[in-house]
Image (cartoon, rainbow, N blue to C red):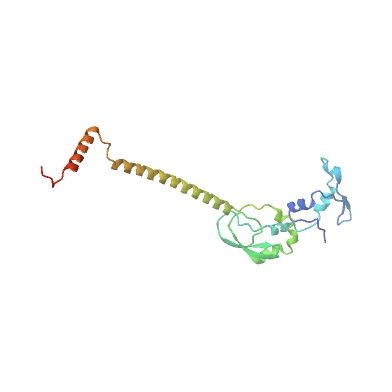
Length: 203
């Protein structure tokens, strides 16, 4: 039957047993193994006889992958696969990218169920306490958005500079040069003659 000192993943064992001190263990042969307690655990070479006995106890360590969350991997393929959900104790579909990922990834639903049969939510101790790693797709999306914003800003700055220079050139070509003293006198004289002359007046 076993006991509850039985975990699928090392992290779960560490979370559950941190600071716990054990007593004697009776193996299948009836022999008693004593685990070190208190200060003796800090010795350079602790007593490992109890650990050796514990290693001989059988539990389904090959099913550790069944509590892993589905992982699409790093590639961009779109391959339908199955993963085991220990909370519902059923297999469900997910899309696999084609490379990396984890072992909770099956081609057939039946293969998924057979591989993970008997694993339930009680085996997921500590899983939800782990910090989720952002998926690569979201990181790539954030980088792409950042680059697009940078490109838009650069184009806006270049456009502003271009139109500013165009306006400057436009105003520079259509302005008359400032009048010189000689042309100013002539112009004023012509204007005066224009203003004084009236075609109804006889000379």
